[in-house]
Image 1 (cartoon, helix red, strand yellow):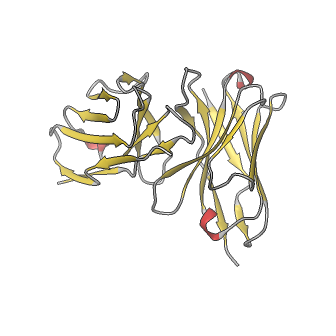
Image 2 (cartoon, one colour):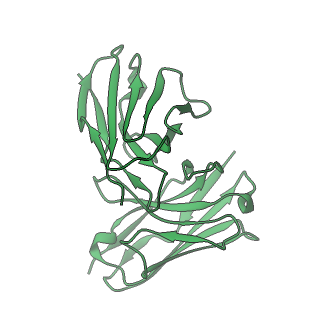
Length: 120
Length: 107
């Protein structure tokens, strides 16, 4: 059974930093691209960042480019999102997602999400 | 960025009704489009990818169609567990983008 377990969310002040982790199990982690998607309270879904299976390629939404960094440790089956220069508008539930492994990126499995609140 | 516009934003329907949701892309995405279902407090669930391919385990009352810029999600006979919010997502070009969502409510 595929499981994705996010951690690291919480309350942070504007300008601060947080590092989210996503522990993956139930599949060969090193074979799949992974992504982060967020959802602001009561709002829709926003793709943030993706990383290829080997970690050599990364992609970002303009809203987080230069502030957030996606990375992975295939030896630990873990995905990360380093979030710097946090803003109030970064307040959201952050989901770790597993790619389908098909030619294009679809989000086959999702974690339960971790809430990040940016407020002074 | 490719914009995805869903309509309607909400729909009231009864159990057994046929429900259709449309997703229009601001530019051609071929058939690189997916649909997700999200229930309150839960993570989204992949229903359909590549515009019309049903994800494993998803009931056959869900179907998708379309290509280019216009796509449709159809629920052939609405069941109580289908009341949720539905999102489309384009996978043609980075940045990946989602539609604004369609809430299916009980009439």
